[in-house]
Amino acid sequence: MQPLLSQACWDTLYMVGWSTLIAVVVGLPLGVLLVLTDRGGLLQNALANKLIGQLVNVVRSMPFIVLMLALTAFTRWVVGTSIGREAAIVPLAIGAIPFFARLVETSVREVDRGLVEAVQSMGGNTWTVVRKVFVPESLPSLISATTTTIVAIIGYSAMAGTVGAGGLGDVAIRYGYQRFEATLMWIVVAILAVAIAIIQFAGDSAARVLHRRAGKGGEPFRFRLFGGFLPAGPVSAEATPAKTR
Amino acid sequence: MITTQGLTKVYRSRGREVTALDGVDLHVREGEVYGVIGQSGAGKSSLIRCVNLLERPTSGTVTVAGQDLTALAGRGPRAGRELREARSRIGMVFQHFNLLSSRTVQDNIELPLEILGKSGKERSAKALELLDLVGLADKAKSYPAQLSGGQKQRVGIARALAGDPKVLLSDEATSALDPETTRSILQLLRDLNQQLGLTVLLITHEMDVVKTVCDSAALMERGQIVESGTVSELLATPGSELAAALFPVSGDASGTDRTVIDVTFHGESATQPVISQLSRTYNIDISILGAAMDTVGGKQVGRMRIELPGRYEDNVVPIGFLREQGLQVEIQGNQDGQSVLLKEGVTK
Image (cartoon, rainbow over all chains, first blue to last red; front, side, top):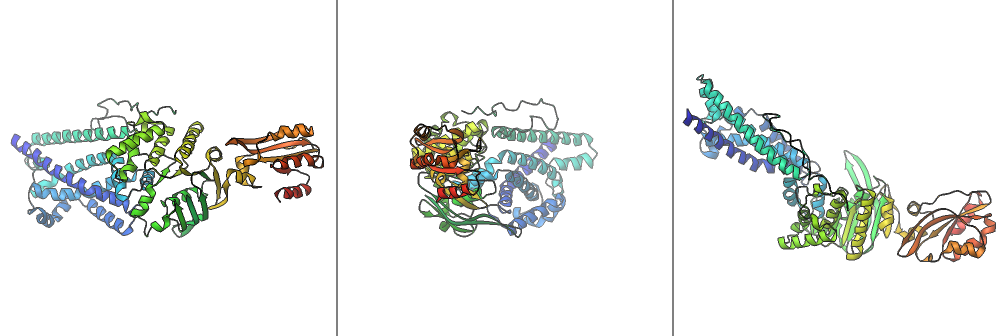
């Protein structure tokens, strides 16, 4: 039982890790592009915006299991096989890219237009705006978006067993459900719950630290999964503005 | 230093056209503080954004420091390299400061230098020097969220000066600040104008701002400049709305056989204590009904409404005396017909 579980954990970690990395690397520019090409954006382009937007919507509305099976040929072309861990990474990443891109779009849209204007008035170009304003200013929000994406990918990865990729979800389905091994089922559930709690906690903490530094306040400190488990922390005192000279 | 000719900006949205600027000719001399005042919607914001081409004018030209920026703009909405270089030589401060919340104060000031491709050492030296200049030397490592509004605007000003601009654009820089902070920021702008020979173009809806720092001013209404000139020129212009708003006087005659006159002091003319001289020379009692005076460069500038005993006919000589002193005198009267004639006599 133990080697089975540790192998499953490792498989899940492997798939989730790689597909998150790819989703972030591709989704971030895509999300930024959605903002840039939008009406009033720095690279306003109705056609490109519509195209990217539609693509994102189509992939996002697709049930993951269908997407994974539909992408079989593409997966084989990319990694040389349509079975196994590597083969699962391709659809996982492709499913997560539009998800993350939409979250990035929302985060970047929140950035104050005035900051863009300020950078332009200094002689900055579009790339400067992306690098110095969009990304750093929305970083807390981008970290939250990444956390949400990881959790979503863990969810998707449970279906990866369909293409023989293993992982915790696969163990739960094949052993826990089909063989009625209830203990194993509950162990998997516990591992997933703890893993998600840890990821959520780490992401939230990182986002909150950055958020607080930027003086945006934010909700009081709380451990989400076990709501109210930890006491609410005080809102930073340092954000109180000093008296004017 | 800054010249606009026939500047027009038309916004089109969903088939509707809104004219924000309607043929604006602006001329800002080197080394002066020029204020454009107007109500919201008058086109001030569009005007200042057209000066560094954050907004593309629909027609007309903008020349800053002898360089025709409209010619650099090229086609399309994106700014080419030449325009971006020209912008980096024009500082700009904003109403809402527009500081990056993710960067420290020092890093915010270094941002324009990063864009200019300066080395790290150069950047931090310049940033610290500027922080010292704006009086925030101890705040280098703070984040904007830890600063008060006035301090944020000081950072904004320091940042605008990082590229050693000759021109500073101020977009309602004090409108989000309380009166006392406003005064200290305006004082800073004044000091920078004098120390660095900086030309400042500011837009505002507060008359006090114009009164406190501006050498020249323009009044904007519905996308057009309706009045402009140096403060003393404006004062010397009879019926100037700006002058009346800058130096408002009010007060009514206390009786029927009284003469109420408005005396305008401007520029070179008023160096003598004329009112007391008038009183002593002609042995008349003068009541001051209202006055709005300021001392600019050691000279009194402003307007005063005074009341002389007797009708106009009795006061021809004293009024003549005031005119001889080089003062502009306007007779306020309800003696119908006659007063209009008298006024015309004054305005020539």
